[in-house]
Structures are given as C-alpha cells and as structure tokens.
Amino acid sequence: MELNQNFLTSLETHFGNKKGYPYDIPSLANLKELSFEAPVTFFVGENGSGKSTLLEAIGVGMSLNAEGGSKNFNFSTQESHSALSADIKFIKGYRNPKDSFFLRAESFYNVASEIDRLAGGIHKHYGNRSLHSRSHGESFLALMENRFRGNGFYLLDEIESALSPARQLDALAQIDRLVKQRSQFIIATHSPILLAYPNAHILEFSHQGIQKTPYEETETYRVTKDFLANYKHIQHVLFDQ
Image (cartoon, rainbow, N blue to C red):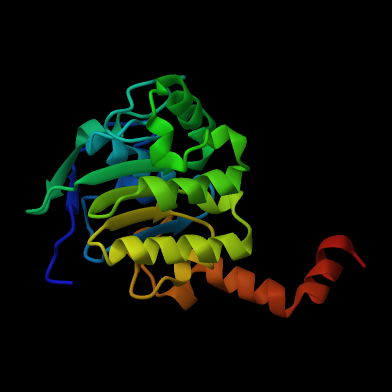
C-alpha cells in the first residue's frame, strides 16, 4: 500500500472543558489525535473502555447511520448515540470510497428490518434473501460476501458476537479480499482470531489512554492464551474444584 491511501487518515478532537459521558471515559478524556495508517485498524479494550463509542462517532462523522447501514440508511429506532462526532475533526485522504457500511452487531436486527422494509429488489445485494431468514452469523457473512463491494470504508463493531471460531476465519478471508480491493476497515473487537489479521494496527483502549499495541501484548491475546493453556487450574480457582 502506498503511503496513506486510507479514506480516513486521522482525527483530531476538540472537547474543550466538556464533562460527562462520553468525555469522561478515561481512554477518550485526553485524546487529542489519532492516526489510521494501515488498511485494517482494530480497537480493543475492556467493556466500557470507549472503543464502540469512538467507532460510532467515526461512523456518524463519516455520514453513516448511527445504528448501522450505509449512507442511504436514515432510520432511527432510538436516538441513543452520543454527540461525540460533533467534537471531532475528521481528516480524510485524497480518495473517496465507492462503498461504505457500518456493521454493528447490537443493532443489526434493525438494519435487517430496514432492508426488508425498503424491498424493491434490494435483496439482490444481500444474497437474494431476507437477512432475517438466516442465522445471525450467516447474515453477517452474507452481508460481507454480497454487499461489501470493495474500494470501501467499513466499520465493524463486535461482529464476533454472532460468529463461531470457524466463521471468524471466514470473516478474516472476506476482510482480506476487500483489503486487496483497496478498502479500509476499522474494527472494534474482543476476538483474538480477528485480531490476528496480518499487518493490522491494534489500538488498545484503557485508563492510560489509547496505545498502539502488538498482537501478543494485548490483554485479549494474553487472557485467551492463558486460559487455553491453564484452563484446569483456572476452573479450580473460579469454581473451587
């Protein structure tokens, strides 16, 4: 990849003296700027660390629907997203994406329902079937295989929640296909499988802020590896067996 061909190259925050959610999330409180230098950037961190909050703000700031979907999706089930995007300056690259989508696990049911409502042949872009006629995981993969066309900007929020380990490998293959078609991904995840994508940049959210972290030094990797290597001991500690 040539020096930075990403659609979103960096962001700068302008929070001023604002208090309360989401400005008091430790990882975001002192955030001034963040760069996106690789085709795939992962957000990792503990629950409540701010990764999905920032991903949502990026989606809104890049004109994507807060609950998920493309720029053409304007529905709102509940106005629950923060105003964070209004306090961020988005620095874009010289290319414009030909495709874009925000795949958000927690509100994907609403996106699938909106696709059905729109009807009019739109299902041809989603595998020629209603996404509601598939399992949660199957619908995620159908979306990536059929709807994601490449040369695009894609935000994925905890998609592993619907994917078996084997299907997470399928998702990695789809991500790689799309990267080779000059796409950019920003992905919030708890999955050590997804995090293993080669040459991705991993940004770990914590009370110390947001830091670029090597794969094997992330808490996600370390906790998973320790559990698999010592699960009997951990069972004993947790369950007094």
